[in-house]
Image 1: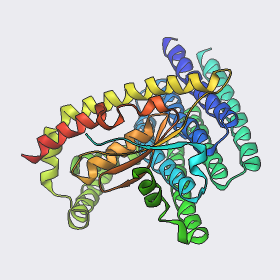
Image 2: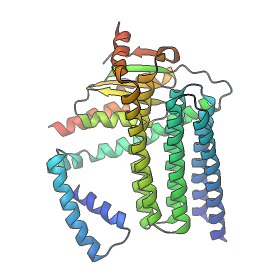
Image 3: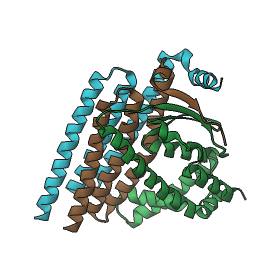
Image 4: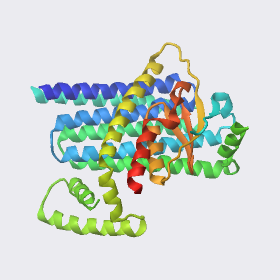
Length: 107
Length: 107
Length: 156
């Protein structure tokens, strides 16, 4: 029973995070800002849902595979969003109108 | 009793996730730019992976997680390759843009 | 690393029998050989990894805390009534030497909601941030300090 409650809380948190990624996708005006909320909140939502599933299934082969899944998602998702951001900045001619460009001095 | 509760929870979460995926599809249709659409496709891909994972715990079969893992790899490769191909074919002369931006800032 | 490969093989098979174990030993030996030959990997890296292990655990913990903190900030921005942000693109340098460490730093910057690494060549980073407050002190954050400490351990 306690296991069920923990699992339900984790999965509902995950669904909430995914949903707010969608809301952010509709509310922001520019692609890069959408990407910030969208792609990264997806990662956290995936982590919450998968940990809920781990609690639900107990220890067996499925659990180990799900842990591998989390690791793969956390390595692969940043790389793909990095590529998207790079494509957007290179192809956009008016990038300085959307966001200011600054330089921090090195230490 | 507890079996039925798990069944209800998993079904509800899967339904909500598919509704969110519909929202991303609409975003992909109306997205004004190229990177908007790719971002939406990326989000749909994460949601589909989550649904497959839930299905595998729901049915208690461990080979379904393998399908999710392969789907994740395929989606990651898709995003990277599409971005590279788009940069190569449409903006051959603009790949030096980041360096230009940097020089502009340093002045 | 050999043990990790073997455990991965077992996990992907999903059950333990004698046949699978024998195949696993052979296949992970082959993969380890290929890694040593083509990917610049050597048994020395294993020893360095074991010596850095406490710092690695600390790094993962810090990364998780940072992700939770900054995603709460990002969610607050999403659900606020009127969105009032100033997006920014920042260029800065980080004095990290090895390629691997730079890649880890870029990945963890992207993983925290609110900042995305756009470009990385040599030791010049280019980061896009959702709001200008998120980039304050990004060039000497907790990640950078921990990674510098790790490099010191590996070099001597």
